[in-house]
Length: 151
Image 1 (cartoon, rainbow, N blue to C red):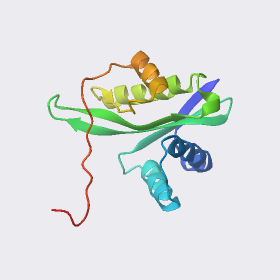
Image 2: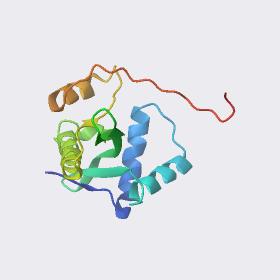
Image 3: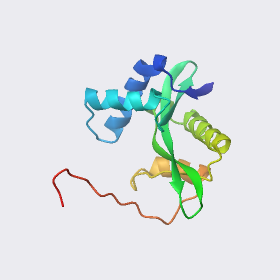
Image 4: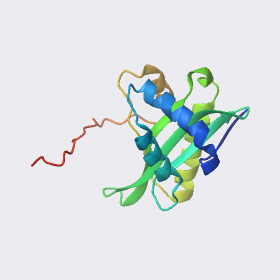
């Protein structure tokens, strides 16, 4: 059975293993310092980042990080999923559904209008899941890297 709970301090070892798995899946390198900073953001109740961990029969198998953002055209708060990850061995177990339900439940209780996220255009398995639990938007995502000495 899959259970989901908010990430708490005692989850750190399981969370670290899962997040390292997520970083590897994303082909991203992650220093211990960056991992420590992210952990502090997640467990610090004064910060906006929220997190939940999924367990399958008591074993940690997935995580989700999300946070509020304000949408001026809707004049309301919405949510943004930064990361969602389920370990290879637990894919198809219902863990992703349970994690997204936890996000939806939080969004509803917080009064958010909607929850958004982005995924890689080549992540067909994730997109099939997202197409089932949400609506695809026509938006294209951009990023603007910020460097300290750039005008």
